[in-house]
Image (cartoon, rainbow, N blue to C red; front, side, top):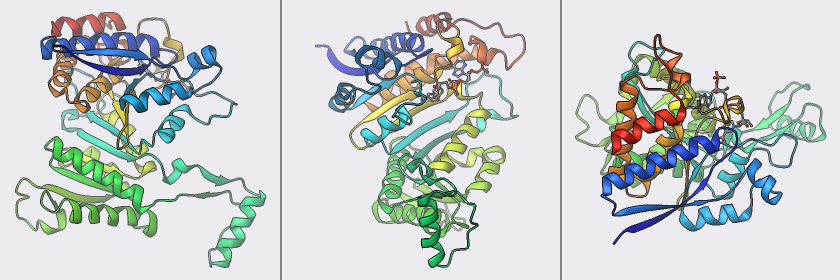
Length: 386
Ligand code: NAP
């Protein structure tokens, strides 16, 4: 009997609907091929963003959140962030409403894709970025406001020296959020047989936020994963014996390391802002955001999404790159237990790109590569799957 799995999807705005259409086709083909038809996906469209506002007068309807919660998973296209309305960012609102505390961004090289670095194949990292705290909390007050002045008085009474004409921002980082993020990163490393988890922090300057993030991370590794992990400091020249090596690096050093020794890192666990910068810097080394998939995960719900935006100037032209969303679809398949379908899909994207079949955003980075349309790219992938 065929097993049916319900997948809610948000087509998104701008190029969203067209990259979603081809991605769904490729994902379905991969599932059909790898399971011999034993598994079928039932796609259920739910709306958010422009489409939702036009349909029901809301940017993020409760029904959409309820459907994602019910099925525990969703594939999401990019959404326009409404300017001048109540919602600061729809993506942030979705993450907040579903407590999707880990932003996961695997970054790897695809042969054939033009890259700005000499050895792009050495980049193969998965970045786990904390999604709920640090600067993402958005706690700040304008220079001269009553709130900023009140905070200034308070912190001065505690000995801080701050200029009168300062805007004030607060970056909270809790033990709860830091530990669950590092825990998720270590679990991922175990599941995927990866060799290390590196916490990236600025603890040399901010001891009780960034430094505490590192300390809480080591505590999680030492207490919950003592059998499967070993701190780098305990290795002293001995082998890790198949255990995951837990390291930490100061953020500025890490930016050097991703260029000079990328092969020494597999999973990075970061507070919000460090991860924000690092994930784009890593993606740039292998051809840019068009190839970077993303996931936002909580304990019971995960939303998989393209990391780029709606690229409105390409909407409706059949030239946008669907790789980021397709690869996010592969992550989703892996997450719901269809690992072989995920790997079929990734393999066919790999071979398509390796043969120089790519959309204009990638083709223009090299020389003499004739770009294909979004639909032609998808057809090339399906051919390799069937
Ligand atoms: P963007 O939509 O990511 O586009 C910026 C540029 O990136 C495009 O002009 C294009 O570059 C390139 N690009 C992005 N995706 C591409 C693709 N799939 N194929 C080919 N090229 C691609 O960023 P933005 O213009 O800053 O934002 C537009 C809207 O998207 C805003 O409303 C923003 O809030 C929203 N947004 C949503 C998300 C999300 O839903 N996750 C993320 C980011 C932004 P070239 O012009 O160089 O060809």
